[in-house]
Amino acid sequence: MKLILFFFLSILMIYLNAAKVGAAMVARSEVESFLPEQFAGWKLTVKARRYDRENIFDYMDGAGEFYLAYDFTDLYVGEYKKGNSEPVNVEIYRMATSKDAFGVYSHDLDGKKVEMGHDAIYAQGFLKGWKSNIFIRLVAMRETSDNKQFILSFARQLFERLNEAGEKPGLLKKLPSADLIPDSVSYFHKNTSLNNIYFLATANILNLSEKTFAVSARYKVNDSEKARLIIIEYPDDEEA
Image 1 (cartoon, rainbow, N blue to C red):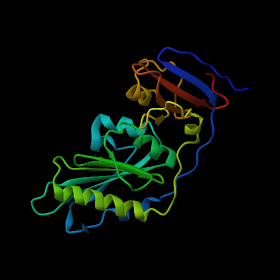
Image 2: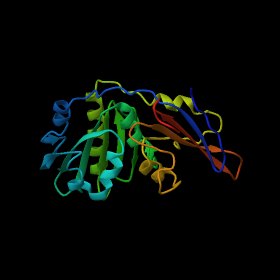
Image 3: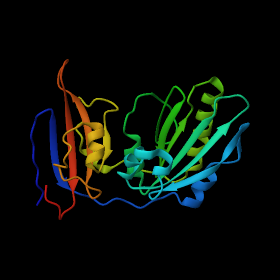
Image 4: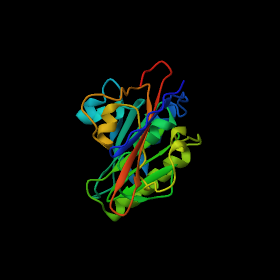
């Protein structure tokens, strides 16, 4: 039997039974080819590096927890430079599912939407986007016209090489559309991710884990008030 619980503070939470997710689509061998030695006059200045769940902290210290909270598989990193232009760091993340690629993307959507992949945003030398089970980040410490053009062109051709389609979590379809605040939807599994979106408690009071699937969104109540809706799917053997 499904257990459905409603309560309001600034949050509405709904508990459901969990659905299963699909498998990975883009293989490791394919991703390794996405960092060419040269692209449009830009050169790979450092040999591309690969990180996985065992050594991701060698690359990003504590920030690795963010990706490990999803079904992260591995990460490929390369730095490109052209003449005296500000270099661009390219990060290609391979997730186990397209749903988790979307989930990583769904955090912090400040920026201008650009038409590539399934979704992508750009702001001041920073681009992130997703397609299939791939999430990418391209970062320049200082934006110039040259590296902006490189970032947009490189990301677009990378996404065009991904023939595999991906899908957003089906849980998003349970979100009411009325008064939904655009770009406020986030998908996650664990308590650490929830606290990055909305701090509820240090303790894992909702019993979130890699086996749970959850979505958060904000809604306009009136001109001055907003509410947050959280929907959580638990596995059949999990107690809410």
